[in-house]
Image (cartoon, rainbow, N blue to C red; front, side):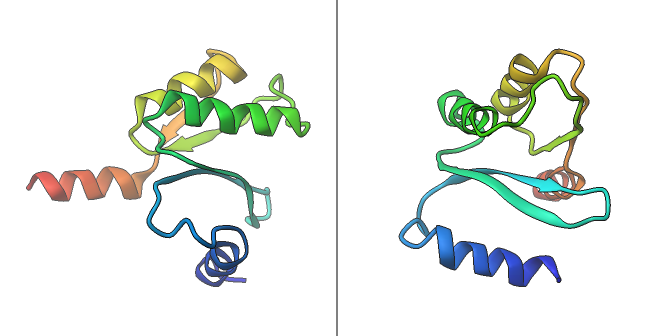
Length: 108
């Protein structure tokens, strides 16, 4: 299934009433490429409290912080900081190339 219809379904099922709010979320991607929404909170990825709430939610529901996982993030420093604080300083973090390209185009 394509990502766009799945996001639309997730938005209508879980995010009704939040359309005008800033949301931060985590999406899991399995090795075969299937995407799964894992957690969403009201708040920005620049907001340390919102990011920590997301991470606490994930670990509280059983996500093992000792297992190494690649994190792909926007440019928010709070997000990277809290991921490393929760999952360890050696957690691989990469910046989303779509966010990166968008920021470059805005500066041109």
